[in-house]
Amino acid sequence: MLTGASVKNIDMSVQVGALTLQNPVMPASGTFAEGLARVFDLNDLGAFVTKTITHEKRQGNALPRVAETAEGMLNSIGIPSKGLDAFLADVLPFYAPLCPPLIVSISAPTADGFARLARDVSLPGVAAIEANISCPNLEADGRAFAVSPETTAQVVAKLRYATSLPLWVKLSPNTTDIAAVARAAESEGADAVVVANTILGMAIDTETFKPRLGNVMGGLSGAAVKPIILRMTYQVARAVKIPVIGCGGIGNAEDAVEYLLAGAAAVQVGTATFLHPAVMPEIIAGLRDFCARRGFARLSDLSGALREPAEVAVGENAA
Amino acid sequence: MTIVQPRKAIFPRPVAEQALAVLANDPVNDDYKHLVLQAGQPFTQAQPGQFFHLLCPSGDGLAAPYFRRPMSCYRADPQAGRLEFLYKLAGRGTRALGGLHAGDSLNVLGPLGKGFRLHPDWRHILVLGRGVGLATLAPLAEAACASGMRITAILSARRHDLVMSAERFAAAGADVLPVHDDDGSSAPENLHQILEGLVQAGNAPDAVFSCGSNRLLRLLQDYGRRHGIPGQVAVEQQMACGLGMCFCCVRPFGDAAAPEHRRVCWDGPVFDMQETHEC
Image 1 (cartoon, rainbow over the protein chains, first blue to last red):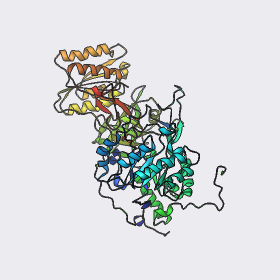
Image 2: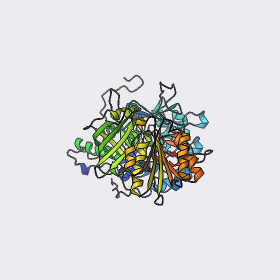
Image 3: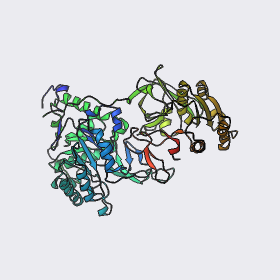
Image 4: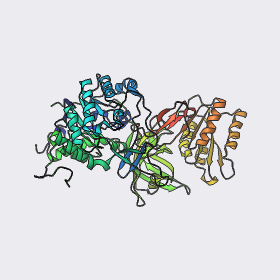
């Protein structure tokens, strides 16, 4: 740690496995589209993460697909996808002239489907694959791959065999022991884990007695989930050696600092972009200011710099 | 460790987010208010049919809505440096807007979406709207007037005193026909006769435009099909991001048997009338 680091000399880069990012801020999958190019310079970002793609075309879920809650958002969009061919023809070329590395988020209903899609998107211009294993697994009665270490290990093993690109695995918070799931992903060769997807929730309209989502249940995101996902990031970072990417309710630089201190190497910003589309470059600027103010010449020194009490009870009864 | 030096931006950036000063927020009648903001570019560059995404404040003891609220632009005036909205006090978002006073500020994102398109060959357009939908059509009438087009404006409302913006359409040189529910003049049969009368008089419009009513959409779709007149309609849908990211504002378009989902915020909010399904 240096004192008096000037803003322009701060090294904002972070390392996520073999990938060097110019800064730790990237969009969460599904919360980024080319429309943001109308608002800020996309080259400012640490990386791009695409909306999850599938092999086949998908229409997505019934409307309404989103509902607002207290400091949060429920969504059940249903991964509408134009399919792999449209992705390769229309989406991939958009990123070609841009500098930050492109992370392609993929999903499939079976482990073999994941492997096939990972192989098909392992192309020049793609820097890494993020496997969205929170989707229903048709071979496990519709339960998400990410709910158990066993099914996570099965799908990650097949993915690892299918691609030599860096493999990020996006975990689900809808599980009892996310650290065990993260260890399963690590042991089968994941290069990083993203913590985490949305928390399953529900809202009901008391006038109509109907669910406020067409799909009845959906994923909660936004500021409301931050303490929960921050805790999971902390638990996972203690459990694995591979980099952890924090994702849950980050809306400003202080939120991002919390995730870094808890052990994240980088962060993803999602719902906040829906409210303030320029929030990601603002967070990057805020992180730089934070480092200058606190005398950090390298932002990456914040990762895992949490000062813990000498004795801390970590477990179900820690309270 | 090397730090990647970003290249120069390669896309234009015509969308901004900014807190704008409220100049006025006055009632127009029992249902509607007129919000005037002080604004510069790119806000005042909004084209007819484009919309803004408003971060509604808290008020009346209610927490601020979490999502922004989309609202079509009523007037964008680069000379006066003003951005105006005409809105109906309806839900949580518009009630929160209703509490704004001169001197307050409002966080605005935009301009967003694809607006109306005027073909240079058109000489005469017809606009048919109802209620607050007329706020969306008023800037279109002015743009058509500036392009030297004739305008027939049929303005529909529940009551005579709720017909919106008649004087603005008249100032744009439109032939204004107010219709309302009080005397039955807004009934589809009467509107049908008015529209057919234009064709019979050799005064058929080159294009028709609408906003704000499924009933009027249906009427104009039928009219357009029978007489080969193209049309455009501005539609509404619940939105979260407003920039094409979240895919929550999709609606079905095209082939009734196998419709395609399009994003209202990104592909619209103005769509080809014949491709638009009722909602």
